[in-house]
Length: 148
Image (cartoon, rainbow, N blue to C red; front, side, top):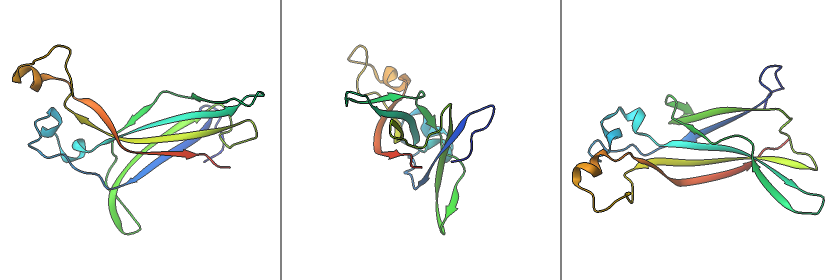
C-alpha cells in the first residue's frame, strides 16, 4: 500500500498469481477460437467495508463495483512460471483498519461457460451456439482483510 495521491486517493493494489487451466480449442464456445491468453479465466475482484454500529450490528457494504480482470502477461515468481492478474482501487480514506471499520478484498476466479438455461426451451443447436457465454464460478475464492 502506498501513500495517498492528490488526484486519485489511497491506492489498494491487488495482485493474484498462480497457474490457470487453459480452455481447449475444441470446447465449442466462441472464446475457444481465441489465443491461449484470451482463453484463461478472469478474476472478479471487489472491495468491501466492514463496520460495527454503536449498537453492535456488523455490516458490510460495497465500496466500489466489482472489477473483472483479465490475465496479464506470464511472469515468473520464485522460479515458477505462472500467470498474474492485477488491479488497483483508489479510496477516499485510509484503508488501514481502525476501531470503527476495516476493508476487505474479495477475489474469485471465474470462467465463461455456455448458459445452463435459456429464456425459452428447448433451443435449437444454432441457438445454443449463438448464446452468449455466461460468467460462472467461482472456481475458488479468497477473502482478505487489509492490514495496517
